[in-house]
Image (cartoon, rainbow, N blue to C red; front, top):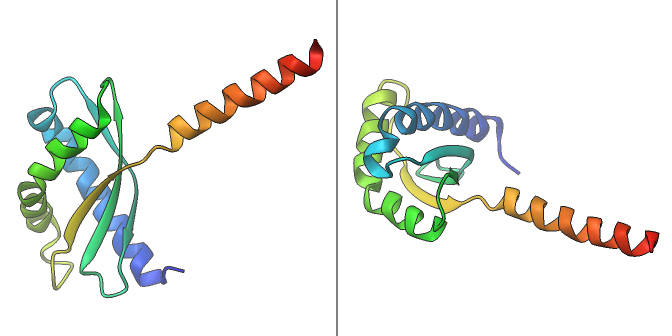
Amino acid sequence: MESKRQQKFAGVIQQDLAAIFQREGMNFLPNTLITITKVRTTPDLAIARVFLSFFNITNTEQALQTIKLHASEIRYKLGSRIKDQVRVIPQLEFFVDDTSEYVNRMDKIFDKIHKDENE
């Protein structure tokens, strides 16, 4: 369970990373919309796990690898935005948030079950 401090810090990181990706996301992945779905931090606030969702792209794993290659640059830009609010800029770990894919898969399963019941 995350503490209030972790949740507040994660919210700050999420907002600032969203602004960074909105302004400069096209530099990393052209013609792709990148959204930050959630951020989780460790209790010592040293590591931030950032969950990303990609739109208008076919290979999300390749997109994630591209973001990971630019992680130090993204961390630097994040640091310049939050340097007055925190003592240490956290290390960023990026993951793909596959919640939407999971929801779509479950919807298809429920539709199939519903269709089978009506037959």
